[in-house]
Length: 199
Image (tube, rainbow, N blue to C red):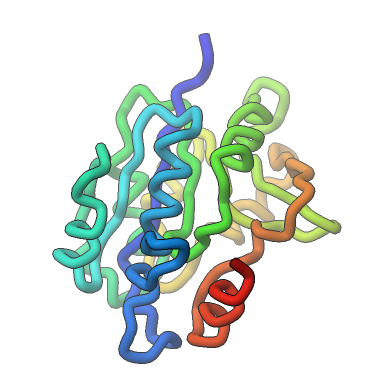
């Protein structure tokens, strides 16, 4: 039987570098950046999609109201990414074998990339952490086996999980992908301009 994998989308940040605009709600191809991420996750092999909200929570949830998603609120979102990751992993269904963590500002992550990572997941073959790699560089999203949930739930502040991945290289598997979209996150007005002009 295939492993049950949950998707956790981090969408609670304040998008400070974008200025007055909430980057997750910026439009590209007639949909918000976050909507693209949520759609890709829903079309993939995951068993559930959890969206972690925080900053402008009502607007963010409202922008996704027509999609079958689970939401979890992170009241500590202002303290950084680690708190949202902890909140998301804490909400994962107890029967999940793993969770793939997506960033809400990476609209170029497709269903195919997510599925390629999930199909590579095999804890019995020392593939407990699966992440995409292009030209030797790691990218996102990252799939974590449930054996790491306890550590992920303990994350605080603005620390992500990269340190945990580095400390567990023996069970880390790099999934080779043909696109550099695994590095494309939209943080600044210039990033958004480049995305919009690439249409």
